Amino acid sequence: MAILRLQESGRLQMLYNNWWKNAGRCSGDEKSGSEKKAHSLGVANVGGTFVILVAGLALAAVVAMIEFLWYNTTKRTRVASQDRDNQVYNRLQRLALNVKRLPVFILRI
Image (cartoon, rainbow, N blue to C red):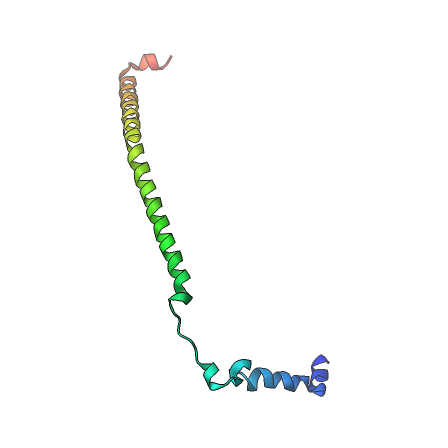
């Protein structure tokens, strides 16, 4: 029903012309020849991109330096902790071997 009303009022033909026959043309196409030229991008137009890239690079370098320093300062603590862990593991392993050697009648208690 609504489509018939649009067709009778001429609105449907106007929409058809706007979307299908005039497709590919912009409203700004009627400008004069000198105004149609596109301007090339200069450093002033894309300078912000380079600023962001350099800032990201600097931030990445700072984070890498902090990680490097953090790793080197905590390495000593980790080595000491690993030595302690290895000592505990070795003691538990020796204890387990000693328990296996106990006579069976002691383990039944």
